[in-house]
Amino acid sequence: MIKTRAIIAAVIAITACAWAQAQEYPVDKASGLIMAPGWEIVNYQCNACHTSLLIPQNPGDKEVWQATIQWMIDTQGLWDLSDTWEPVLSYLSTYYDEKEMDMSKFRRQPLSSEQQPALPESK
Ligand code: HEC
Image (tube, rainbow, N blue to C red; front, side, top):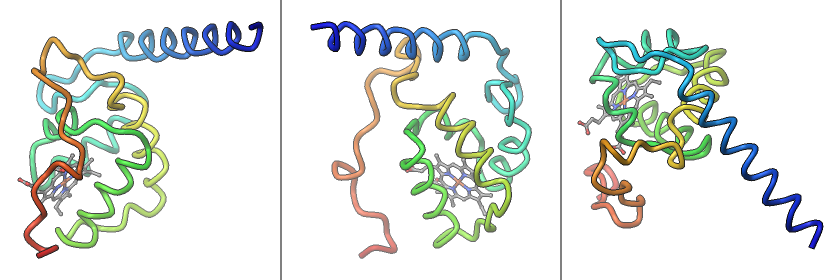
């Protein structure tokens, strides 16, 4: 019982923290990115081929972001992020986690990768 309460309290605290963090920073008008620590590295690298507006449309945790970026490296000519991997992943998974999605802007959660059609190169 105490354990359950502690878990609930922790979940509430983490959610409140993430919410407070996400609310704290202004949004850059040009890129649409939350101007939290690390946003510049993402802005420099993630606007080169496409608009960074793709970022809020594809939220995910660290693993999901790593897979998305690795896919661009393997198939779309994205450079190796080398020492910016960690700050980029930590920024994206903190501010563009699925749980943080602003449902006033989106009609529904994005489809999971199993529900999406195969990418052309995997055929
Ligand atoms: C070298 C070019 C290039 C760079 C730089 C690049 N991307 Fe992409 N990215 C692509 C291409 C090409 C697509 C596919 C675009 C499309 O489907 O219209 C894509 C798609 C995406 C998608 C959508 C994935 C999906 O499942 O539909 C996201 C999210 C994304 N990029 C995030 C990023 C982030 C974050 C960065 C910075 C680390 C980045 N991109 C930098 C080439 C790039």
